[in-house]
Image (tube, rainbow, N blue to C red; front, side, top):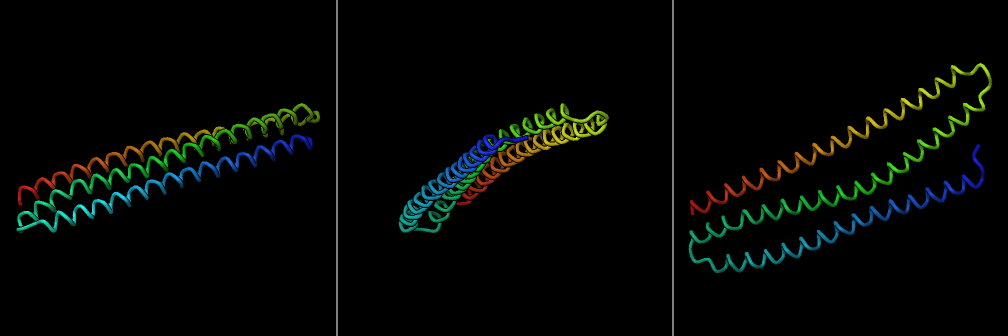
Length: 184
């Protein structure tokens, strides 16, 4: 049976965990805001430079060459931005996952301690019920571990796919830019 002190300690720990998670989420939002601000500044500077360059063009060939020269850097910046967004999201998710995993590990320990305490105090003849409860707790623990492993594998596959797509996009853009320069 839980005592008042144990309940108060658990409540305090839960409040600390909630505020810790909120802090991690805000750190992620702060990083995204900084990234977006830096990207907006860069885009404004690029637009100013590109406009100046376009105003200096004296013939159609120069314009085609300018356009071809702008294509690849723009694509590379877009890929870099996407990568940074992904990295921020992945880092924030990793931090939150650590906290959640720690909380779940503590919960599993508490459930195991509760079951052990209940087993010690179980009346004679309840061995089948005790075995059933232990089996259910073990099955739930195994199911959670399986889901956790599957989620980690899915995240690894998603990251590999993201990397493959971004690499492919950069190569395709480089090819298009090279062809455009040759045509110009």
